Image 1: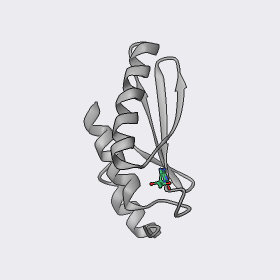
Image 2: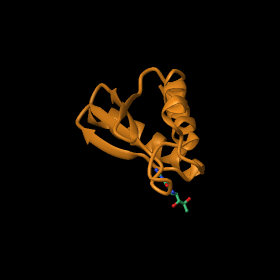
Image 3: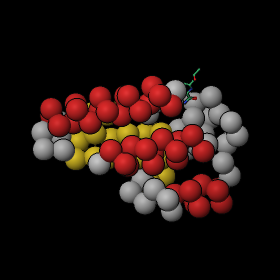
Length: 92
Ligand code: H2B
C-alpha cells in the first residue's frame, strides 16, 4: 500500500480528530479508570488489529494507553492506519 502524501495526511487527520501526527505516525492516548481498564481496552484493540492484520505500537502506563500507528511495510502513513484508527475510535 502506498504512503500518503502530506495533503492526504492532513485530510485524513480531519476524520480522526483525537489523533495527532507524530513524525511519520499518528498517535492517541486513551484514559481509563485504572490498569485493568487499560488492559481490557488493549485486548479489544488487539482483536481489531488481528482482524485488520495491522498492529499499533502500544504503551501502557497504568490508566493510560498510547497507541501509535504507522505502516512499517510502507515506511510511513497509509490508509490502513487511518482505517484502524477509526475502528479503534468506535470502541470508546
Ligand atoms: N502492522 C503495522 N503497523 N504495519 C505493517 O506494515 C504491518 C502490520 N504489516 N502488521 C503486517 C502486519 C504484515 O507484516 C502482515 C504480513 O500482514
